[in-house]
Amino acid sequence: MNDQQRSLLLDISSRFSPPKGVKLSYGTSGYREDAALLESTVYRVGILAALRSLKTRAVIGLMITASHNKISDNGVKVADPSGGMLTQDWEPFADSLANTPDSHSLVQLIDAFVKRENIPLDGEQDAKVFLGRDTRPSGFSLLEAAKQGVASIVSAIATDMGVVTTPQLHWMVRARNKGLEASENNYYNQLSSSFRCLLELTPQGSRPSGTNNKLIVDGADGVGGEKLENLKGMLSGLHIEVRNSGDGLLNEGVGADYVQKEKIVPRGFGPAEVGVRCASLDGDADRLVYFLVQPNSNKIELVDGDKIMALFALFIQEQLSILNKSEDGTVNRPHQTRLGIVQTAYANGASTDYLKQLGLQVAFTPTGVKHLHEKAAEYDIGIYFEANGHGTILFSETYLCALEDTNNDLLSSSKGSEKQKAASRLLSVSKLINQAVGDALSGLLLVEAILQHMGWSIHRWNELYHDLPSRQLKVKVADRSAVVTTNAETVAVKPSGIQEAINAEIAKYPQGRSFIRPSGTEDVVRVYAEASTQEGADGLANSVAKLVDNFLGSSSS
Ligand SMILES: CC(=O)N[C@H]1[C@@H](OP(=O)(O)O)O[C@H](CO)[C@@H](O)[C@@H]1O
Ligand SMILES: [Mg+2]
Image 1: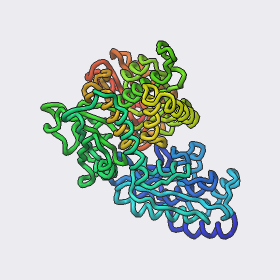
Image 2 (image 1 turned 30 degrees about the vertical axis):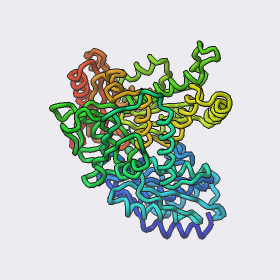
Image 3 (image 1 turned 45 degrees about the horizontal axis):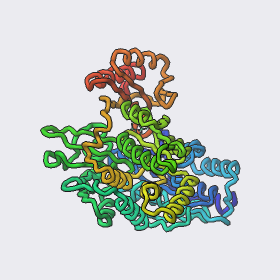
Image 4 (image 1 turned 90 degrees about the vertical axis):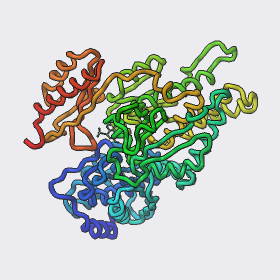
């Protein structure tokens, strides 16, 4: 590191001291904390993003958001050149950077890392970082900290993309690195035009009528509602009404996380919505769930990420079997294309059974999109979803090129044939659905297009399979890192003896399944339980939560 770079770093970093007594770690989805504790972390992640840009010679994204957490929290995460999450190889460096106590140790750490990684820190190459933030009030000052972080690396330039959804920022990073225009308008244009293409390819006779093309969306009082308002003006063939688009308190009794975990109607929804298709976004609009308001109660019928995945899988499989049908029309060879499904242990057991019955390959990874995304990228078409509604469909570059060629051949030989339409549909899906990361807005448009294609109501969709009753609980403990898991988080190897005790509880319930893991976004241990009845799932979850408390002690003790 030359003198100019060293003194720049020493000078600016001396203004950002890390909070005392707090150990920060790059969790499931970057750093999340009370916003008041995050200034130095965001500053340092700004440095990291600039270094990553130098290393990869590409644009990097830095997003300031705490998604579904309460409004007083905030967070920061990094998007890699592909638009995906920061490579996990750099997470240990991110942690050292966030926790190093003073400017001198910070400079030493960066110096050693830059040498080890061969990062060209000589000022000759530009680093470029796109910055985004959600609607949290703390985002404004944290954005300044991020700018200072980027400015601490000579020749690094930060571009403020403003208030955006997390998936918009990831999309912009990906688009720019492919040499494409990457404005918010380009994003809306791509989504609305591919949605239009899909609707144009809807089979005759399955068009919806009456209320079936009306959708009411809960925007979680976050950034997604406002963005959906922008997008909906560009859509036809769908009537969207947006509620909770920013006037109320972010994530408080609203949003996809609340709806999925509590299974209760969000604020602003009630008896008037019985029978109407409703959807909920989370605070940064990377999660989507659908729901139906139950008559005479505040409960909902949840149509979660697993069911969105089932709908997507069914549609993609249908297009593949049309496309891969042999010339005589008799033999289906859908396995010419490697279609893979990726879930986590939170996926409802009934959804996994359903997907397997369709003949699909189902793989499991630990929680967090970074894990699911990586696995899904191994297939020609990989569909991943978390039960909470975070997911997307990835098309490999090789497969997309082949599909473009096939479509062009079919356009010249048999334009308008079933095969050609199937190829066009798949190409439209690849443009509509965010290739960088799960995106509630693009996911919503794909769900809507597929429902129209199938001629289905939300009721018909919901009937694909019946969820096993489940319950999720959170347990506050003294130190959640005392829980260590293996086997895609389904087995707890620490504290010793706890898994045997959990197994003994599971054995008491028909179709029982339960697991624990430390949350990567909140200071809790999460408990998940499933059983043949709701009472069973509740009972199992409660007894496992008690075990967690007994083995780990409560935080107040
Ligand atoms: C059970 C659950 O919903 N966990 C969520 C939650 O992670 P935790 O590590 O469980 O706190 O937030 C992540 C980021 O949004 C999301 O990827 C994940 O699925
Ligand atoms: Mg989110």
